[in-house]
Length: 340
Image (cartoon, rainbow, N blue to C red; front, side, top):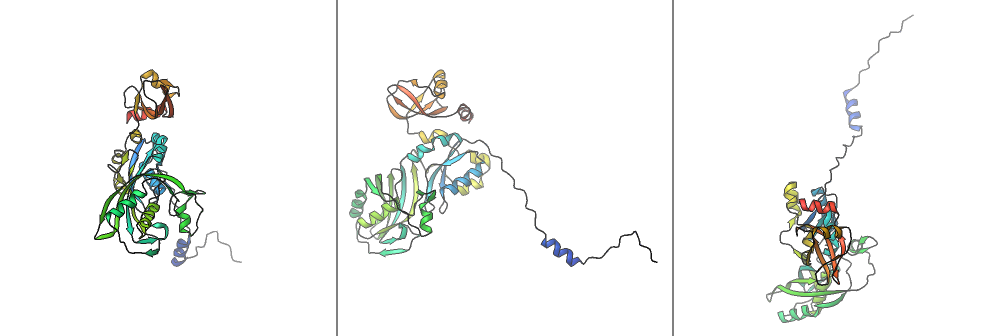
């Protein structure tokens, strides 16, 4: 009778079988590396690129700075470029100030052609000859200066049920909208030539919520030839403009210290408010929310500083000789800004 061996018998395996099994094995995903965030305070004047939404631009900038807290101060739709102030840290407390501020735009109008949505992305709906002179253009611009009523266009960043109207428009959905009152402070003709009458470039200074594509269409109809918005660039937001702004591409090419050097002080958004300086005792009480007596004329908005005249404490208003806080920085924020 044969005996059983205690030795293990090795069975050869074809190399091809090993290779097949190795390829078929699921890959183990590499663990995600969490980027540490840091406190950042200040305002970045971003020159937003074409094709990027304001929120996408904000998120890219926030990641580049590794910032704990950030927000933008007025939506630009993807077809617009230009000034988009980004607030970090303590500056986010004053982002509403920039949202409410007047805006300035440089708009390029293509006269003689109307398009779906009022911009160059839409299909052409009509073409008419352009037969006007500079006097007619000046008269048309004057007609839309002052308080006017506008119907928000579907190709706008106005939100409906949490989504921008331009998202509905791209899906072929039309949403009911209500007219709104806006004020056009000024329309300046920047470029128009009689030998190229179909191209008109204007600078527009207006209140928040003004739709420049709607304005372009209205000017075109007033001229009898129609128009659409061929280009739009925001150049002013409240007291800040494109001077000293930085592009996203430039930020991406910088190291962190260079990016930090691009930040403006928190109070850059309040530069057109009168300033009030408090002594040490009054500054401490003001930061606790107490009203203070000041020698100052009544004012709807003032920026308030500590004894050194440089440490921002917050925003307030003055009524009947009393300084009344509206938006306060926390003591840690004041200290952080003082170090900056």
